[in-house]
Length: 162
Image (cartoon, rainbow, N blue to C red; front, side, top):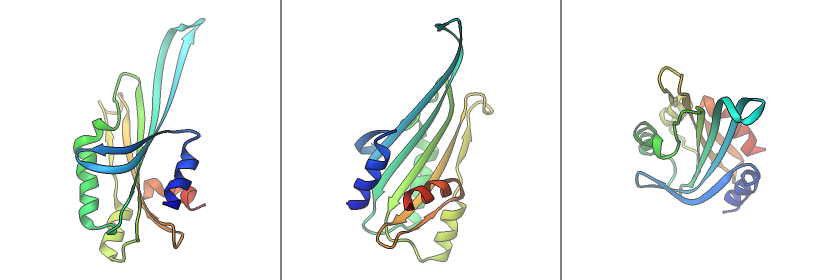
């Protein structure tokens, strides 16, 4: 509970937090949403030439039973089939990042550790013209101040551990 409160305090300055978020029957303690919109205009802000959005979503869940291979498969299935419940791919969408943070005991199974480190999800829309999605995966054990992540979320892991 202490780690969750600390993480919330770090995020609430820049992110909109929503408690008890659920997607496709999978419950998360909270989701943090960040949206950045940039635009180019002529003379007046109402005359926009173009605009684009960059979004970041952080889904946090505390796992009591530990992280297993089934959990990794559920995350893959969730992103492949239900990403549209998290992000809005509209005309201004450029990029979205989804980071899953799990507070749990770190796995000891070498095969599972390698699967987590090699986890990769990238999806582009209309050959990148309508944007793309990248997904990061972070496992954290705050008691031991240890963590594990895929390549895309290494920076997030360092921020969380600091």
